Structure formats: C-alpha cells, structure tokens
Length: 69
Image (cartoon, rainbow, N blue to C red; front, top):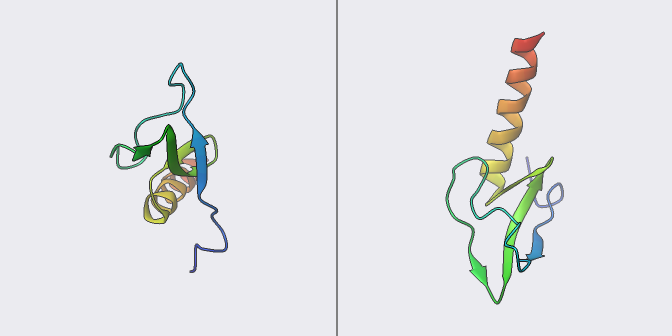
C-alpha cells in the first residue's frame, strides 16, 4: 500500500507553551524540531513520526476494537 497518497505530512508550529507532543505516539522517538517547527503525521488525535508508525498505530486500534466486541 502506498501511504504517500493517504497520509500528508503535517508541519506544525510549536507554540510558546509547547503544547504539541514531543514524541511519536507509537514508537516514542522524539520528533525532530527545527525553527520551532515539527514534522509529524496525524493519526486520529495523535501524531506519529513516519508512515510505519502510523500503520502500526491504526492496526493496534483496530485490534483493540475487535477485542472489545
């Protein structure tokens, strides 16, 4: 599956309060910051560092929903 068409990279401005997450929601690696900007991929209400983490996070959420039903 080609994620290039499904996922758009988001460049976010880091606010003065630092409210944007500093680590990937899946692998917990820190995001790269430069000039008060961070590049991250949105997955629901979370952010991940790359398309592999995005897919893994989606799969975990899908499995959690299956287990709950």
